[in-house]
Length: 218
Ligand code: PGA
Image 1: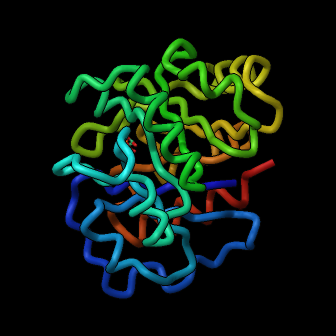
Image 2: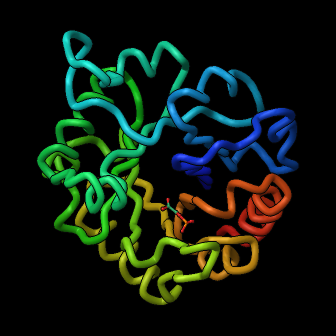
Image 3: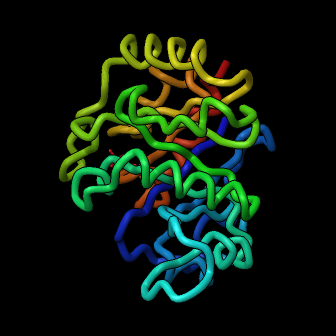
């Protein structure tokens, strides 16, 4: 199971952040921090993730952060095509495909976020399943002021199993959208992990979520 904390654009205090998680090595914890905080999170019982990557290689692209610079910071995973970026910044599936390609070239595992199967770039269909991850999350499912807008477990179960029949063998499919320590058990037996926004900002809540997910996984 992979549990990704997506801190979004929040300023989380990294002082003594997750010194231990209390779970076995089968559960990978990924902290997808804002770029500026990746330095502060250099070591801990988690892997580093980024929330975005440039679609350009290193070079004259002001303001961009290319995949090679992220891998120098030991970033292992990178979200691409999060629904907030698609909706608020107009990111298209074509751009998401370019970002996925850049991450793969730099040896970073892209976590391709999609609200529907059509949002998964074609590149994913021709990439070995162990080289990337998919995350299902409709924009409407994102928690608002901590409110639970989660997709019904049955709908997530159906979506995950349908997508797995269409994607390359072995690909992991995560669910994101209002996951918290209370509802995580309702999903843990049929997903490969979670992307967690709001509930990852508070360390006590996030640790509870990790514990509950790992006792309910299949
Ligand atoms: P949420 O956000 O857990 O606050 O709903 C998840 C995400 O958008 O990655």
